[in-house]
Image (tube, rainbow, N blue to C red):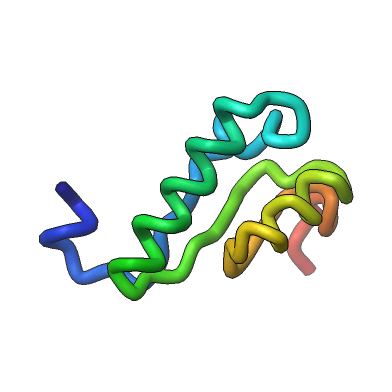
Length: 79
């Protein structure tokens, strides 16, 4: 419903779906469909909780636009 009515540019894909996509076909299917639907609305996707290279590779193959998580870096103190 939100995708239809809100003026947004990005859809963040919940990490609970992303975290296990290398091992769980159901999570992979969910992420693929969320990305596909967002793309069809002209929106970019951001996957969170990307913690390893295999997950990053799968997301790239799906065409997910952006990713964030420990695979790319750990949080750091400001300054």
